[in-house]
Length: 148
Length: 90
Image (cartoon, rainbow over all chains, first blue to last red):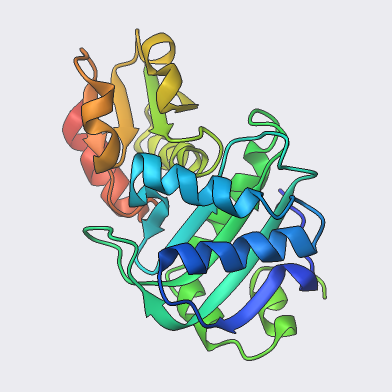
């Protein structure tokens, strides 16, 4: 089961973000860098959280930012952002966030296998700490199981 | 048995929940169909569901239902999902 496409351009290490919106924007910029989404996609991801709350913080320290498939998505893709300073998203149990994943999906129904691959990586309780400790893009790609 | 995982967009978080719920169900030896869906389609998808898996934010929006609504805090903690599914199904 392959991950959504993740390349070096989709990795940002030690990003400075003053709040959760800024953190999601970094992930959005990375998705735009990789050509997976337009720059506006970041605002779509922020809007999902404004609308539905911080449920995207799916586990302690980990946010899976994403919006619905739509015109802002150009192709399937993934971004991995580690934050220099943990940022609260307002989640009652899983704050603060240290790793933000940005996910862009062209279609809702066909990309479930790639979501399963994300679950596989992060079902390992050490994965988040390993990402936070990574000091190079190559290390991040390695933890994510991607050949740099 | 039908189980529905609900999130805002129906593509990301509910997908993780679906995958991990399927793992747990397999471990428990329970046959069930798990669907991931967005909160907007709750009326159609959850009509005949026995269990709805979601996070606290969506409980109000799910509204009245005959299904057991299970709130999951850590989507990646299969033991949490297992404990809560067992309690609901047992």
